[in-house]
Length: 322
Image (cartoon, rainbow, N blue to C red; front, side, top):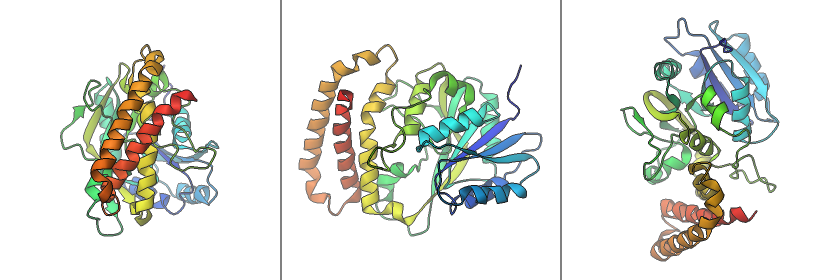
């Protein structure tokens, strides 16, 4: 018996997104080619302190007749907890994740639903993500755009191979997951979750990537769907040097978790034996990079970000001691 009452779910995880989320909802309101498709939009309020819920409620009063718009609450701060709440709350087997600054093109929902329905072996598939900036594109943007979830793998669909080097998965923003695949293989609580005790906003960097590695290790495939396109509205503050350096360090700190998650479950108990070798390797790469580019850190943001990422990767190897 089919327990899913919807064909497709759009899940928007937000924290204090009252100023950002109207733009996302406007894009969803304008979606086309959805005749005969039952879909819903879930806004996961991740313990917001602003009027996010009131904003969503106002939209719900005059929403599309072919779509439900509702809000659910997740008190545990962090993207991992918010997405787990979305999975549990969704009434469909396909959940398309949008951040509260992701703007889908007008046929995004249709293309996302069709691709999943036509490919039963695929557990997850990602979008092309274009940048939308309020200021001129800075000269260093191409070197750091992946930090900001800007991703264009091309106009042809392909499978993210598990044995590829380097191993990749799509960005979590604009990604669609099959609920069955998530429930089967993604732990309810991930290693990368929420904020640390010092309220470090970058502590949860890599939460979505960790979840996708779990699915990639399973019987399900992960694909790129070029027909799904979104724009990432990037605020000017996120292009500032200090923000980018902290973001780079945060992603670097997730590296140990990524290494562990990329292994098959039977391989993970051996990870502590490999950790000293990772520490030595990361230390060598860090020292080499510093000696080669230290004079450029003050003027080249991309080089400074890469250095912070390498510091984070070196530090992440010590997490097994906790």
